[in-house]
Amino acid sequence: EARARATLVSTPRQIPDVFKRRVMPTKAPSAPASLMRARLCDDHLGGTLAADLYQRLLDAGWIEQFEQRVIVTHKGANQLAERGLFIQALAHRNARVACPCPDWSERRPHLGGALGAAVLQLFMQSGWLTLPNDSRALQVTTLGQQEIHRFARQDAVEMAL
Image (cartoon, rainbow, N blue to C red):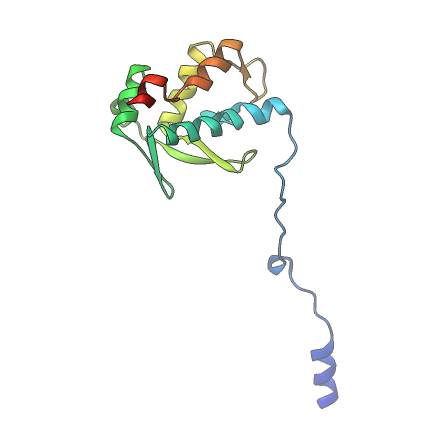
């Protein structure tokens, strides 16, 4: 009896897959450069362009992030209104006004929520971004490169104050 127990205990057991440790990849999955640069992420802009824009919005004080909550500041609401994006109108939608959306290619957030969708719509209506085919990859126009890069940047007058 003791020998049988010893045999059972010393026999290696298979670890069920559910308990096996999964190693997360250290690099983002490879994807076409155009898809990683600018793409549709649900109803808003994703990719490097979007993650950079999100950081500029934070740096300029247009938005503030508290854990998974994003608020549009008074300054941000005014600046966005000058560009035709009215926070009060977005607040009446069923979705959150703004939220961080994790970007799989950048490992940093971009802007989601109703504001993220409105920003994408503004960029597309302005001709800064186009959706050339059935792909989610967005094409950035020459004018779009300049204008999106300037969006939420503090200008020289603002920085001097």
